[in-house]
Length: 412
Length: 159
Image 1 (cartoon, each protein chain N blue to C red):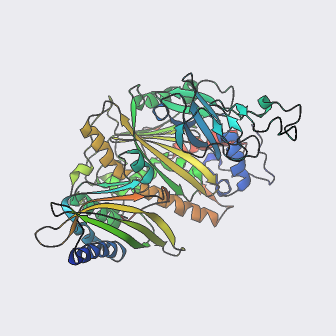
Image 2: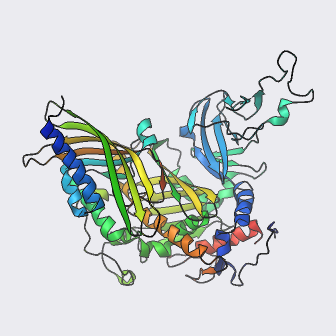
Image 3: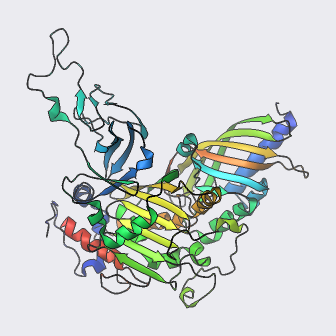
């Protein structure tokens, strides 16, 4: 097993993955090691969509972990990526979110880089009037920006700091590859828009939330009331071999009280919409799953909730905060009605989402509580102690599987 | 065309009612400031500038506004909070059909109970207002375009 490089001693609780130490949400040393080993280590991180940079010279700026990176399409049409930090004095060479350029020029001393992050220009390299200039042995090739490995699948771009990680296909594993391809099936994608929020909680709380169907059938009164997600629906929780990726798969039920809803304190069986067009889902995938929430290590959630499709990118900023960047999309062959449906159902999922607002609020409350007891621990026992796929949603197995992998990578 | 004094006062009253119903309530009165087939959108500025349609709130009728109000009051789990809308720089033009094209700057201060106040959102409104038979001005269309694209956690109440 890896060893942690923490300065302070750390012991994981005896319960293993059924007990999660609160220190992993509060300790800056652990956060630092997560950034290095998880985000900038052996992982394929989501960075954007091909449709966002369709032409040579197009670029977008995004983040892997806490590292700003530039993703470009070079003059040959290939996707490249490099760290957005000038080799000279550390200034961001690109300040825009998106654009088109041949060269990225640092604003400070105007060192310029090409679409591969190669240093191409250094002003006054030979001095001015034979005064100054770089030393004889200065070689531009020694000062290229660190480049990223790039992989794409179905129009989605992933990047990695690792040079020899292996294929994205193997990384996803069979089951997760199948569900990924279900949404990114080769059709051209259309970006419908973005939203961003700064959630005052540790980044792992977001993954835990999406890997946890137990809460979804209790906390989300809106979903439960309309039968969109309920504990008695035909569902599955599935992982990959490592446990790092996860899938929550569920089918829509009825709006009625059942055995599974009697424990829900605030179920509103009588709740009906004044304008039912808000929830007007239509079947659009070959199978009968109405919700598929996929979590892909280390920074991506792929959301299919009825007809809202979104990528949620997790950008950790410190132990107790992360940014969540949403990219909503549809397909180029969507008709106008389908696009409107996606936009309307977007009311459920955003920084103001009728459903997702519950999550960002509860993540804040969780972090608040954890901060008060950094040497305490949480309990992840629902559904037993196992790590295997389950055919129901009364389980926290995907959280256990996630931490099983996390502990190996982190050496904790 | 410019608004006359009385029309301008009516418009100011509409914005005042808008802020009052959201800040002090009753929240259920807020949808009544819109026409039945009104459109209400809350859009991050970058989407708006790029012509991307995705809004974080999208109500295509007064009914959907009522559903939002119901959710705020009964289904969304959130900490207790208070809002204060500041609506300034109202600019308005009277259209030939009697509707009013108008806009304003806004900022919303939010106090989550027990926390320091923060600016939850800042941006502008781009609105279309009509005067139905009962004389009450109502929003036919309201676009809330927020510059503060990185939302501090959650927006629960309409902006």
